[in-house]
Image 1 (cartoon, rainbow, N blue to C red):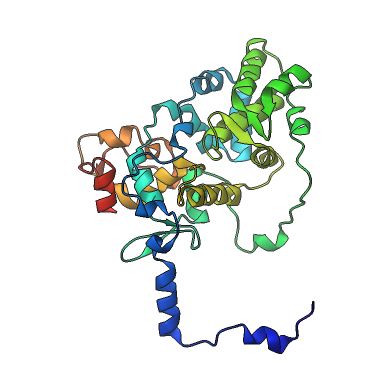
Image 2: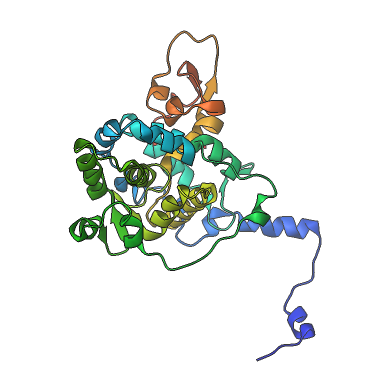
Length: 323
């Protein structure tokens, strides 16, 4: 059924001025008005989905087995920082009380954290710096084109192995399991094969499944597998990583499972909320020793001799009150 323009205009309320617009926006930002939002559940102690972020006992051993050429691939693909974070992943301590308290402030419509006096969000530029990812250049959006086609996970994994038993063990449903890929990497390295690019691609899947795209315990989706595979083709993945984290926070806000790069979220919190660099400190900050900020380089690098503003904030109730 066709509608003329005048009939369409009748459905649009007249603009009533900036004051009314701000009042409407203020109403939108009320987290308590969102049905089922975890902001209204003070009894919540565990963020749904946090049990997926367990330690990976197989991760560090495979990274130590990788040939020297692997480092070259990581630099070429812009994954050097992700590699360092993955290599130290088992040393990191996720402070889930702080992550839960932040998730309680997430607004799924504005994609921002709503604080009493202001709102804030994780920017693409920040995420690219934090994870050391290749950066989008201003104006580049107009030259980028994406082709949407059916994702064939087996064709991606076939670059690694063509053995059907291996492929069956690596996939189930709409997910790819990281442990069988790690086992394949181990076997290739111990046999000292020279298929270096395939090994590097398999290792990239493993480390990206833990740092930028963690979704389920030891598994990633076919969609994220395709994104990770595109890294070796020169694609930039910053937008995908940030969008995935936004989606995970939006899932958690009404009580669903949280997913996405908890490491990136903690890096952002460390920069803006938790730590402040102090040059004349003579002792190391114990909290910093197990924080992702201790393992990133470049402009984001912060010495472990830093002041932790949150040292006395213990437990989820204290984090809620502080934030």
